[in-house]
Image 1: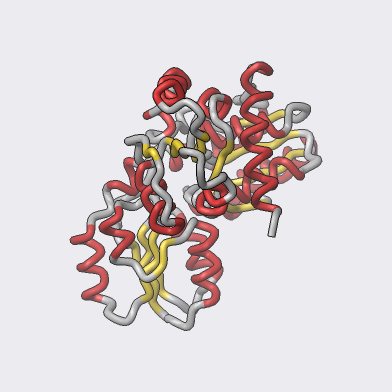
Image 2: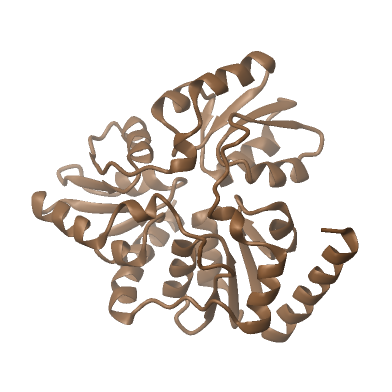
Length: 309
């Protein structure tokens, strides 16, 4: 795309955003062009909080389907748009509401902690949601004598076990993108940059997490990247975050632990699709009220814990 074409697209997007009284929010894994036009960029928790707080009439969610669903649950009186319905999530598709009900039947009395990377129907069957940045805090809020079912990400769940010392009932889901990050590739990056700080996302395998200096959510990675004195940082997560990291920290070098570990679903949103979404009000995301009410309860419990000191 030429610079002139990109400028025309951005100008049209900005005009329509004003006309629609819209806000554009984008996940850290979106392509750079989308991040650059977004009003707010963040991780799942930050985007959930932003959706809950905004007064905008239209929320254009540049992320994946479960994120837009979460915004729709939190903002029932606003229009939530997803520019491309193919923006799914491999992890969220690994578990269904029926499978959650089966787990609860096997472990009566257990508390179901649901990672937000899941459908609204799965959230509705859960007791409380969590994100990668607050999962340990959520689990620690549950009485020690209660069993905890953690769905759907087994690797985030294993990380929480290490953080809290608490045994969880883990589901066998995972993020296909983070699963592709190999310890061998991380070792190569460390050999080429021996003084680099290594930051990994908790959706990585335990082996990759163990080889990192710190295991953090995407927002945590962004914060640490600003704070660190290291001039080189190896990042073990989806490579879309490198755009934000480099933009915010031009004096540092960010090296992907896996150069080809990008999420195809996250990358389907483009400036053209974003413009079309605002022009035609496509694609509205709605959650049935019977599901939304129960899902909101689980999300609200998470948000309350996140606010607590």
